[in-house]
Image (cartoon, rainbow, N blue to C red; front, side, top):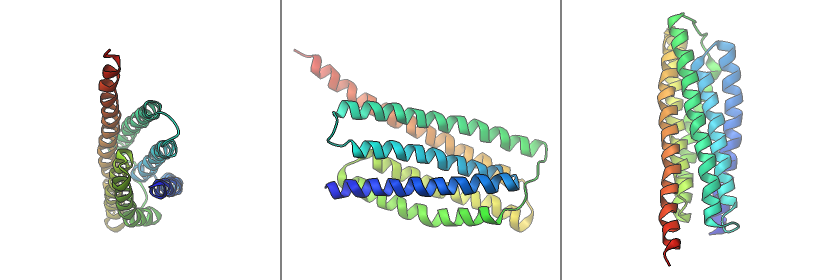
Length: 214
């Protein structure tokens, strides 16, 4: 069983490392081409890395601290990550609308297309490995994280369509439109993360009430 916990931790380390490289490349090339969709994709990768750090802490603390302490810290950190998703959604929505209204035309970005394609290949495989491992060790947090990883693959598809339409057909409006699609993903992920924290809190309350019964 401990080998499976180690596998879960290694998968999260890989996720964080990959996301940080992806974020740096996406933001850099997004800034060069003026692509809000690519920048938004990179910002999402940073937040996903924060979520991965929370999960690594959770898996490493298994059996070392009390369940109450473990879930309290995870709940607070999870809500911080959820809040970050909402803040990013507001920023990306503002930038996307601004580019459409003022016709700020982004340049075509071949590197961005390559980033999206690589993510479309890597993320589904990673999501399946996380889901299988989380199911075998009974970790709801790891299973939930696998769904976030799968959402990243869908996000990559939205990015690919937006950048591809601009690159192939000169349809520059597809880039800020893709940014708006990413906003929907950000809001959805933020909502899911907040719900996850709330579920943990609801599970703790009955335990506290039972302890008070003489």
